[in-house]
Amino acid sequence: MSSPQISRRSMLLGAGAVALGLVGCGSGGGSSKGSSGLNGKDADSMSDFAVGTAFRASKPLTITTLYDDNPNYELNKNWLFFQELTKRTNVTLNPTAVPLSDYENKRSVIIGAGDAPTLIPKTYPGEEVPFAASGAVLPVSDYTRYMPNYTATVKKWNLQADIDTLIQDDGHYYLLPGLHQDVWVDYSLAIRTDILKKLNLQVPQTWDDLYNVLKAMKEAYPDQYPMTDRWGIPTPGGNLFNLLAQAYGTQAGWGYQNATWDADQKHFVFTGAMDQYRDMLTYVNKLVKEKLLDPESFTQQDTDAEAKFTSGKSFVISTNAQELVNTYRTPLSKAVPGATITKIPVPMGPLGAVKKGSRLENGLMISKSAANNPDFLAILQFIDWLFYSDEGKLFAKWGVKGVTYTAYGDGKVTLAKDVDWSGLNPGAPKSLQKDYGFFNGNFVYGGSTELLDSQFTAEELEFQKVMAARKTLPVDPPHPMTQAEQQQTNIWDTPLKDYVTQQTLKFALGTRPLSEWDQFVSECKSKNSDQYIKVVNQAYQRWASKQK
Image (tube, rainbow, N blue to C red; front, side, top):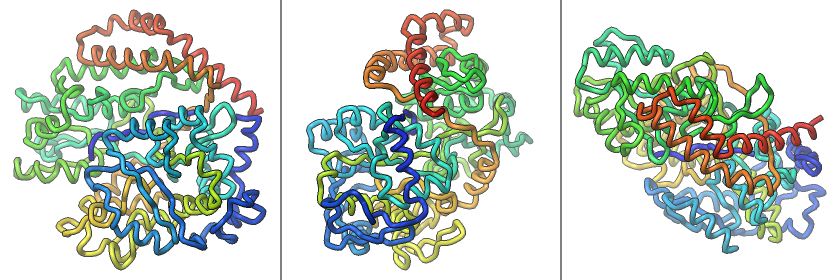
């Protein structure tokens, strides 16, 4: 898996009261049609579509979709996924493929030219904002009343606070997100357990523990950096800073946003100037200064970091479940016989045993042209079934029972003997993704914890068990901005992020001393950090006043 796009952005009322009302509508499992209000646009839809109902269009229906083409499993229109989908739903998906490497740019061009397909998937929260402002995509909150699986899920998993972060100042939201039952933690650190055993060390539980482990490794192997890291391009310290920041109560790396909610003061503060941000950098600087962390970690290519780790030149590196199995374990065991590794629970910091994150995943926008389609209601029902029903999510993930898998239940899947996915069935000749098109990032979003657990090895399930026991911190409250506010803050936002990123790297590496922290904060102010936060807090206060 290459460096991921992390869900790293996020955003009523008046009309918003209506929008929120619609979110809950239909959550009792009733029909999505009835007195639908979409007369003339309900061709080929189901009159009795509800939670637990398999969707099937009354006549063959073709729906166009943008398609993020992953080089690891390039698009094949003859995949069983497409064939079986048509067989079950009477819907044929017509994809417009765009290379993963240029997906965001090409998506913008296609939408701007007015040529957007009906479905626009692989859109992360926050990415929809410019398209919403231009009117190119639908305010989907106006139509969730016709999506019984979606509305039932929002209610059942108490996701309203998460959904609220999508709402724009006009009271609507424009992205149908993937919905997770719980915060899913995947990224952490991989560590050489054979080295721990050799040095009589325990798996580190906290970041301070990790420092002590790295120090002991350095003493035993003085000519090596105990830790080297990857995922530093384009965001230096993307994963490492993201993990550390959450432990300290701030945001950094992949998760950096200029505004962070201060729960004690009940307002937003500028992230880069937080004491917690400085404390995090002090920790990283200590690792670099004592040569415990390879200074190239923040700028080297992933392949270079991987090579150092798998050749035995380093002992700790960022990972996720797939990378542990697919990238590290086999080459390491070949290069260093007897070497063993594990993904450790995310180390804890000053906040203790907590985790934070949105339960929303990337999702899809709907082109404005869909609202004029005579099949609009059928399209909404199809989306609701594929992306939000239990049946649809199981199908998109694991495929066809008896072909790609033989059993599913209690959070466990048994793949067919000749099918593998991410090492669940090692040695099997066929790939669930490459050969069949299932578990495809364009169509697999969110789901229950039970469904999520089904993709994990026994080792990963132990990791998930530890992380699930940690307290989930609430999401930051919304601060939906007017179009004028968005335009103004956009002028400040990127330069501030870029500057904080540049200076963060300098502080971490020690090329700028932390004694200049106050000067750095003043420099951020000269780049309009105070003005930026003032607008954010004004937007929040306006939103909060409408909740009373």
